[in-house]
Amino acid sequence: MSSINIGALAQPVGLISDTSTNGTALANNLAQPGTVSVLCVGSITTASVIATYKVQVSADDSTYYDLKTLNNASSVATAAGTGSAVAHAFVLDVPSSACSWKFLRVVATLSGASTASADVTAVTYRYLRCEDIFT
Image (cartoon, rainbow, N blue to C red; front, side):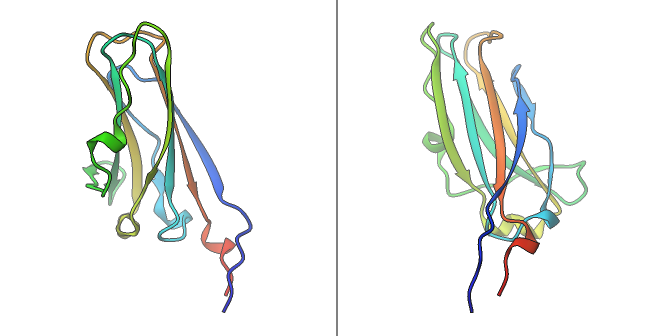
């Protein structure tokens, strides 16, 4: 039995954060279970502002629930801005249990002092499509 990885599909979902921004939903039927991850990038300039990211799941693309992952708060929170741009980039692992829900999304939240237009975040979903795995 062998697998061929033709390459992960990237679905960019640009987020410009005000305070809390819901990302575009990813229909889970597109992704092979256990292959979804989320690249979280951004730049925080305002002093005392941090960005946090969380994964949510839904059965109907209307009501969403927080998915409590193995990532702890230090894994999903960024360093605070300093008045100069502080960039961040990391990957959130989405557990395979998320595949039991029809949709998932990422919520980016800026908290701390008042945010500014220079405080930005973006996420990209990465996954293998079901038809990209052969046995």
